Length: 554
Image 1 (cartoon, rainbow, N blue to C red):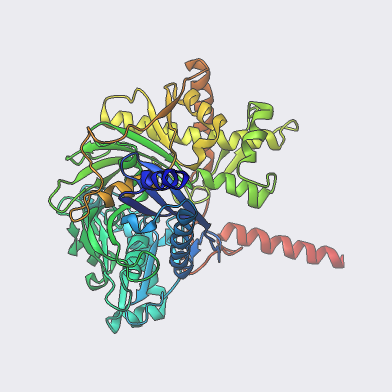
Image 2 (cartoon, rainbow, N blue to C red):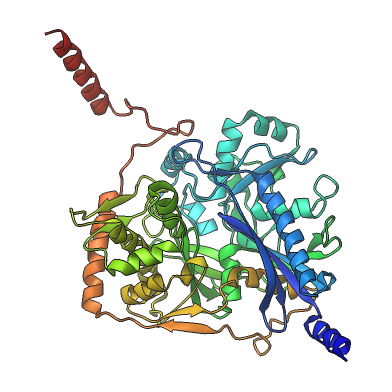
């Protein structure tokens, strides 16, 4: 009888399952979902290293990223086995990824030709400034076609830098051996066979973050490629976000179709079920990203936001667009406090520090480590901490760091409300940082509207799993609104009056103005501005040295 009960328990959890690779800036995960309940059955996570070879340069090893995906898949399947869940029931795999991060590799050897240039990388600042000089304000064809400003953030300028500065890349292009892709393309090409017939593709959401993709025609654009100096022969094929791209060619899931692909923020939008015009979500990860679904129409921003592709859930399905407010540094500020200031040992400890004081005591932190993204788009801005007194301690700085994430969200929400014309009445949130209750309450206080936190935080991976499971030829996940499991929410109400919130926000804006235009332009080849980078500074240093040498002998 006991055996029969055990068999029944096993059978109760069996059925079609869907896996999702969630490859982020700081970690890789593989999660397995039950399509009927949208429940995570198990997962495995591996941290990913970031390399900083020069100031402003941010790189990752593409082979380490790929290996982390394989490791996560293997470990998750092992864990399923320990739960008596047969991983053979995984019928599809979705991929969601850090966007914009740029990889170029040799299609004959499968070897990367350089490290991946991460979306946060600033080495292309001078390139961006030069390109902007060639764009007419009255006829900005780049923004008209892509919905994006020319910025260090997007893939085209990173790829331009690689072509200009890496001889191996130049040679591979000459020999017609080079392939370019964002992280999704690199993973799917390898997972579907690599040098042995790997599928070189990307989806419309990732393509829309390259500055090479026309968001109206949904194709690579010759004029854009010519402008940025990119040969179209190295670009991946454009696909929808939900279709079978190919089959896994190795490992425990060999033969399983890879059938979903979404950039991480689009995946979170789908996972939060923001599938109707006017629905919005904010994801708190390494950066912070507020997306509002604008339906099947492109809405151009007048307030520094991006127009981007939200998703296209099938080859014959319509494309949906979104307005996006992008903040470069959110969770990354906590990592910086942990690794650089070393005042906490784990990221979770920042909540305890902030809770001890409950205020920043007039200290304001602008974490513009990679310049400022929306709504300023100023790559020359740099981080500042101001309002310090002798009373300020590490707890106040921790609180100010959390406040900074909330103030940045307020800035992009204000811009979103101005563009859409209808203010959001609440904000749906997800991502790793939302586990911090102090942050969530601060966010509600600073926005003066309720914050709705998803009780199931894995909405990014969930979106990729939904796209994969719903693909034609798979069909184990229904996207019919009547069939979708409702995302359970926890509500945080504002607890301070609007006047106090406005005063704090106004002071934050004052601090932001101190951070803009901070650094001189750096050449693409240099990581650090030379000490003689400005004539005035050089004259001052030389004069000081002469005086000191003279004083030595007087």
